[in-house]
Length: 428
Image (spheres, rainbow, N blue to C red):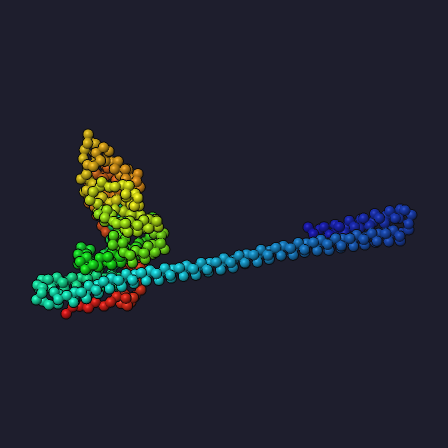
């Protein structure tokens, strides 16, 4: 367009100059004057055109410079913003690394303390055994007694080695919704393995450990290891709740519990995935210390469950106040309570309401009923008849050990157990 406009303007200037020259000539001037008028007018037009073109060019250049400056300013702002974001990102990464390092250090330190405490307890008991005349001198004890003591010593050493060598497995059993049978929760079981890989059931060692005062230390260590592993599992699927056993000894341990509470406060995101479980007798026999510590866990968002139920006539207000949100009742016990009143199913201790309303009654206190130890399809039908929404048992899946790599991720650093665990001495 610019290439056409300029020639057209030149033609216009020439026509305008010709008109001026014609007017001068008609006014009586001679041809020379008319020519001078033509040239003068054309010169003025060309000069004006040059001036206007220069001004327009200057304006255009000024606008271009302003645009470049604006673009430069935006680029500088973007660079500054990017640098700030990069600095903040670097700070966050560094803080996360520092926090993670501090968390692991705290976690390892707590694990070391637990193992060390257990080692000292075992060492103290062994020293007592060794200094007892009835143990050292065969005349003060029968061969059978000596054999039992030697067997107990070997078992305690096996426990110690299993804990220090990280031979602690976590078994999970599904808890399903009914009637869909979709896995909603898992119950966790801690199991120890000896050097040959054989699984040690709690019944094998608890009597010996209890007699020697080692159960509190074992409970504390197994509970901590269980929570450690559950934390790994929760990162994979936080929708799944996991029941983890906690003992009264752990709740009232003045050394262990404050450290454990601090550990959970740093991992309170587990509150939606971790449910602490107590036996009915343990819950009923809890003291003020245990109740206060349960309340501290509840303040962090953790919930509780009751198992080993012997009677289903619960104090619902007490359960609700204590943040108990689940009760596990054996299918056999639950169905034994059924009777027929005026042709309708009822419970022996609640004859005035329909048996199907029992779960709804507990639900009004925020408590869900889980039928456990379900072994047959007939039991499932009977449980559905009384509108129980959750069930657990071998019918839905046996306890299975979780993958070894998950356990490996929660293992203590190699070699620390040797430095913190006193070496046990065998008696001659």
